[in-house]
Length: 191
Ligand SMILES: [Fe+2]
Image (cartoon, rainbow, N blue to C red; front, side, top):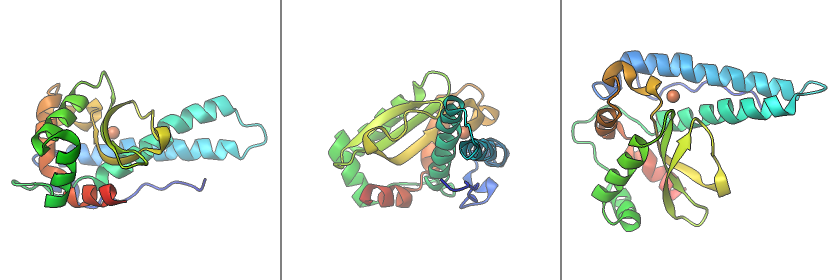
């Protein structure tokens, strides 16, 4: 695997306000995500040495490379804050088909993400046969089970919201819907 690079944010740090502050975005992208990229590259470099410590390399990649991948999708899954942010009619229909209604989907997604124990992610995944599934990802792990693809992910590590919301993860999630990039979700659903 080639050297990984930190992707640029598709918006400025402050454009997600008031859902997510520029302060959080800057720290989250420039420090946390950059750290995962750096450590993933160090692990990939280890693989090219004569006697890699495979156990350690796999552990490092599982955490840091998956962290890099998840954050890269998370940034694209968001866009500038919109008061009346809503999914495209096609996406709304697709979600309603799988979850009964769009409101049900939103409620289930929030429940999945709110109840992650400790650090992790709430995720909407698509199976190879096109079925949609909500899942919790602990830390950065459990990715790519059975070739599921990431459609919509939300970071619920404390570093993603604590500076703005303290321990109120539920409020963070409620406001987060105003920055969901439904065009990106539509693209991932269609892929
Ligand atoms: Fe994060």
